[in-house]
Every structure is written in structure tokens, then in C-alpha cells.
Amino acid sequence: MYAQAFFVAVFGLAAIGFGVVVFRTSSMMRSALALLFSMTAVGCLFLAMQTEFLGVLQIMMMATEMSIMAIFMVMFMMDPGGLGGMDMSHQKRFSIGAGVSAAVVAIAVALLSDWGPAAEQVVDAQAQTRALGMELLGRSMMIFETAGITILTAMIAATAVSIPVKKLASKDGKEASE
Image 1 (spheres, rainbow, N blue to C red):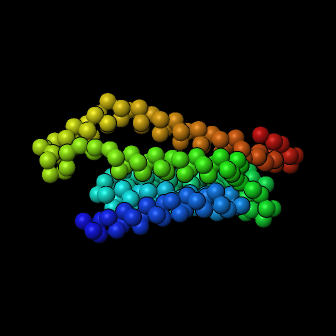
Image 2 (cartoon, rainbow, N blue to C red; image 1 turned 30 degrees about the horizontal axis):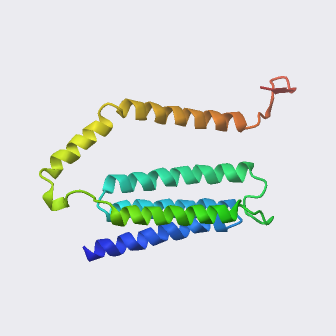
């Protein structure tokens, strides 16, 4: 129990720390990597709380998403390395106030809420978990699969459209373009 609490605290602090770095750096690439590390720490939080499926899913999704985002930033941004002294934060006072307010509310909810019966008091935890899984994936699995294929198709199409067409040599030696 103490080891689990230790790892939850470590990964929670890592997620918050890397989340702060996202907004404190002037480099889009460093910001993307910090966001990747923050989301990976959230995935590790899920793993520490023994929700392996959510943890692995979080880590896999964020690794893929941040890799794609970093590639597009390098391709399309004028200054992805942050060498031009770009300031990525806006409305600093409001942002700090909103963040502190949200943290206070989240801590108050966590400490003052009644979280229901303890794990020992749950009558049939395995049946409840199975019912939840069937509810989440039974009816809506086709929707998730369709959305995934649609997003993949859109990414391939966007990449194909952004690639410049090269001039090809025709059989008679003249240049032709497709």
C-alpha cells in the first residue's frame, strides 16, 4: 500500500512538473516532449493504480500523438527549436490564477467528497468490472473502430496532399508533371 502511494505521488509530481515545463519553454519541440513525458507520467499513474489497460492505452496513444505532432511541427513551423526567442504563453496572470483556482477546487473535491464504499465492501467487483467493460465496448466498439480508421485516412490524405509533386521525365526526354 505504501509503495503504491509512493509511486502515485512520484508520477503525479512528474506529470505536474512536466506540465509546467510545457508552458515554460520557448521551444515547440521541447514543449512537445514535455507534454509527452507529462502524459506518460499520467499513464504510469494508471499503472500504479493497477489499471493496466488504461495505463498502456494512455502511454501508447500519447507516444503516437506527440510523435506525429513533433513531425508536423518540424515540417511546418518557422522556428520549432525556439532559437528565435518565441514566447509561448499568453495572459500569464489569468492563466496562473485559473490554474491555482482549478488546483484548489480539485484538492477540495478529492478531500471532501464521499467516494463510496471501500474496495473491501464491494459485493462482486469482478462482475461489476465485466459489466462496465461490456457497456463501454459492447455497443460503441464499431464507433471507435470507424473513428480510428477515419482519423488514419485523414492523416494519410493530409500527408499526401502536403507532399510537392516532382517533375517526371517522359519517354521522349521532355519533362512532364503529374
